[in-house]
Image (cartoon, rainbow, N blue to C red; front, side, top):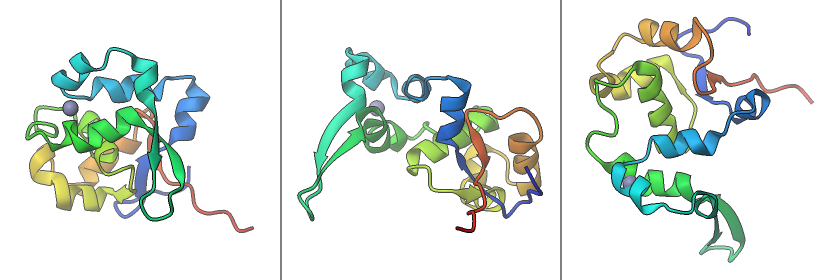
Length: 145
Ligand SMILES: [Zn+2]
């Protein structure tokens, strides 16, 4: 994997989910608020929604579960809380921010209070020392083309 440090950007590696044969959408669903879980009856239908870009009028296929999590569930005050295991809290952070890569340092600075751990070295160790949790991995260095 190469050397990782507190400034290495991490994200949810969606390829990992495919390789592992795990259902990302089902895990995403598990992090939704009770109201949304109750509301979503047809799981497969909820995954795919068509969204029209207001600027370009281009129709894009979005993950409806993910959009709902961003607009509803992640806005709830207890979505990220210190009771959650760090791995789960960080998974929720990446879901809420559309998987924008963040380093352990950034996670500590921005979310330290909410996740109850503000030592970036500890966060890094938890996320990268053992097995991969929910696909949270360092981003691949861009290959020279
Ligand atoms: Zn919700």
